[in-house]
View 1 (cartoon, rainbow, N blue to C red):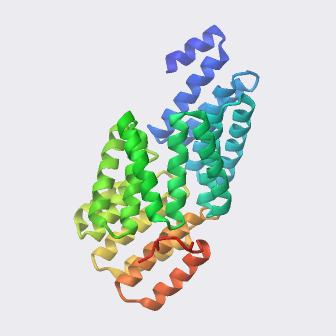
View 2 (view 1 turned 135 degrees about the horizontal axis):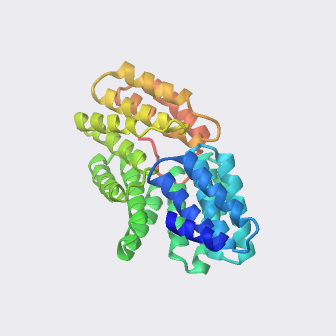
View 3 (view 1 turned 60 degrees about the vertical axis):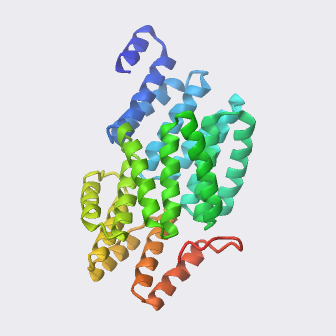
Length: 338
């Protein structure tokens, strides 16, 4: 790709050069774990495309630029670039691209637990995906909708959605989609306390993702598997994974420390070091930054499970009261906290 960029520059082809820069930026992000370099490359691509008519090339660059914002934990930046991408997709009359932008914008609302807004966007994204016939658009919209259902507590419905994506991804040989579907199914099993099933699903998702080397996904899978193993009593392996997880930390990642903290808390709890585990959960809770309300929810759910397992009913009830404030129960919902 560097050769393609250099050749395009020599030929005076700014669109081809920008496409190469976008691809290099995405590789710097996902393969090398280098957001500053990725930002430099994609910003240069956007500069080159500003005076060009290729809306699709600009759309792709904006998607990568929004992803860089997500790695930095800057939801405002993600929204800004995705709104630009959505406007471009509208101008191009591309329903597939509108779907992609709409479902990513919906994800930003899910992160903030603004579920009504997320539902409106996802409903539109699913309509657009159906009209466009794009497999890529349908995968993204369907996975986001399943995540929305899981966050709202509708685990049965979420599982059905994720199973549909898993089957389709497997038939089409779409490994990234398959890995995400497997990890989401693992989350459903985890919330149901079916840890053996969760372990199996997380291991398969991790195997697929490891072969692709996507550093944006691997840490979350390491954390999920480590926590699951801790609950299964496989503490030594859980601790090893938690330690490896620490080595993946990026100094510019504002919320990765929370993932590391809650993973180590699960390991400490499994070893019977309850005071240390509780302190780590509480420290992680205090460290949640604005705009990432879903991280507060994740930690609260783990803290509730911790208290319930130790018959600390009053402490658990206080935590669950806060959970109910964040995500009011739907009449048809399956309880996320047992």
